[in-house]
Image 1 (cartoon, rainbow, N blue to C red):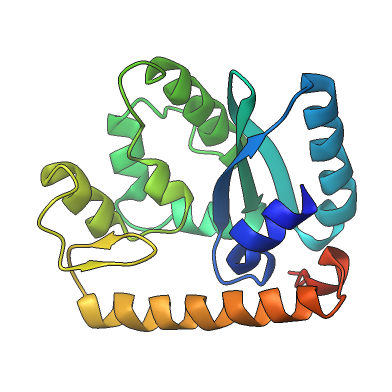
Image 2 (image 1 turned 90 degrees about the horizontal axis):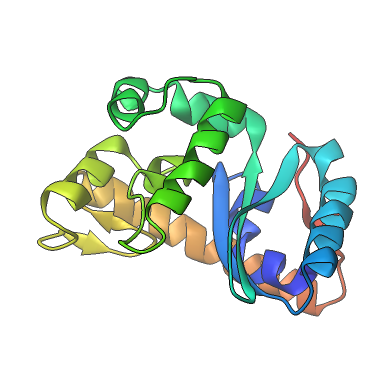
Length: 184
């Protein structure tokens, strides 16, 4: 799981994003949850948490987040109202994550709960734009589809790309995930 975290979650480990998401293949559910437990033991002290949002067959959707950053992002103007309209009654981080898990179960056969973007640090206006345009007509596509503030998104994408490259380089040079995680 360490390599997946390094490849898919460098931005969260560096503290640039509130969270990251990746699909993790596994052969044994006990082993999956053992890996998640090991990662939490290693990372929780630095403010990073790992949970499984959904299991489907031999794949798990793993969510890696910084609780404090996620709380800040969910508290941004308009986000709470948007989430309440989608059935998120408990605005706490734990309550929202529980509801998000349930939303994945609800969408198992029909798609993906698009509010996930808010749990990944995407701007509310871009999540709304994605939903309004069914993922089309975006002005910029990078780490997410941007529908407004293209220059700001372009600068964020540039910073994200540089961070990921630096983390890949440092990991290849032998730095451990514990050494690369920024404590917050």
